Image (cartoon, rainbow, N blue to C red):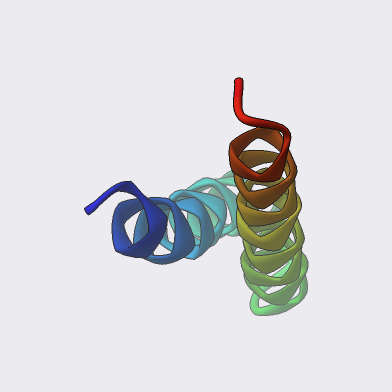
Length: 58
């Protein structure tokens, strides 16, 4: 249950923050795409950490 949540929420949060920054700084759509990309990176990084932790038996 945690893995789909992490993989879904991270890009959504990045997209929302990027969209908000785009509105404030008038840089549409660049920061939205950067936020989305960083959200995917964060989600997969957390997935890797979870798998690594599970593999160690912790």
